[in-house]
Picture (spheres, rainbow over the protein chains, first blue to last red):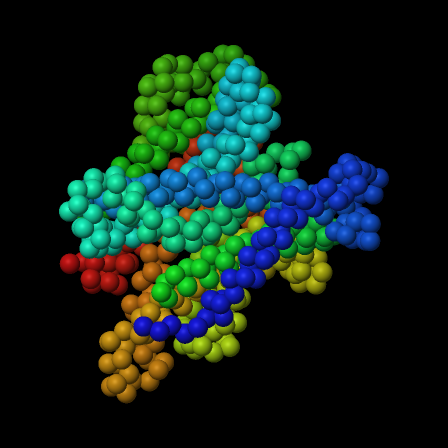
Length: 291
Length: 300
């Protein structure tokens, strides 16, 4: 069956290039700024100029520097969260795909149910419930690093916990197909046990599709994180992410003077990252399907 | 279908239980806030809601109250019960959600059919690129940008508020656009696949016009993935409306939800979560029913 060549099908290179440049920019970029740019300065709400390419925020900090710093948090949360969702989704899908029909049915029904409840809302309540507990536990154990970043850690964990559903469905579907293939039967005849078949025969054949859905999970986690941070319930000051920058921009809207750069530039940064990630994932998915 | 219906109370029970324990684990007691209650009143309230006993009794009491339709008192807004707050705010949230749902589905279907009917043409390419762009623009990015353009620069529409049709337009569009794009891409893909099937070839061979082939024959099958996306879509719209309501100053339940977390207003928080979940579970049931009506293959 031939598919019409789609415009988004061909270019894998462009989104990869954009993502690579972004990764370099958010890691190395902030080093190029004078230290005073990160601190509150006299020029609050300065519009973009040669000194401040993206203008300054309400405290006179350089917006471009904040976008790069925030981007590091957003991208890191996205990547780590997606990894966790990959881990959970793959295990769930593999087990469901190889289990008895009754167990499989139960596991996939659970996925259906989770799909239809407002998961982000539960995550909000969950973060709210556990953050102070984790902090006091970290204090008690003397884990300094966890006290400062407990919010980030719990954010990554909980976002990973809600984004695995699609992954589980895809993996289960593929596993059901793969386990009927002759090479699996051959392995069974040769005396391979169930775990060996899973690890050595089915999992390697899932690698392509897993990479595709990992790529697609990263932008979803980034969006979820931005959603939470926009509401002020995700990343907390002094840390910032694209979501909290957007919230600051939205809060600066007033009828007398619009600080348009506070909205436009964080939006553009986020848009570019999401577009590149979705574009890359979509292009890979289409080329995998066409095979 | 009966199995699905039987599952309903189980799901609701799980949701209620999880909500109750998450809220109990949240910091702060139900009646401590900046304005301390007189000890006698607090004691009476605790006794009324059976919060002075062990956890199992508190849990049982909460479930019993819920079964009687009592979502209890808000701790922040002392003079109002959660039922009253929700009765006032939920219609606002639901009308915004319904407007966004209609917009997302109609726009998505139209773009999806439009693109799939023109395979390999520049128009299809433009549609695919535009929808990819829209998928990558979450509502909380779209919202501020729309305000910037339509309210601040061109001064065509109000910045926020609720009541007039103009005030519904921007928030509904901001909420709907990303999901319209998801539906369009979903429908485009499934329609392209359906159009290569045998029954479509047969319809074409009979001499049916291309428009009728797509709308009367292929769309009936291709629309199924879109119908099964309606459940998750409703969940996403309800979640997304939380930000859109705060952004556009809309007096809906979403704003109260955010405030209830910040104010540690446990019963209000629980009330919003539970009502949202019940609504979504019912909506999903309706979507399931629709799939069954539309797709005879599932019934057998």
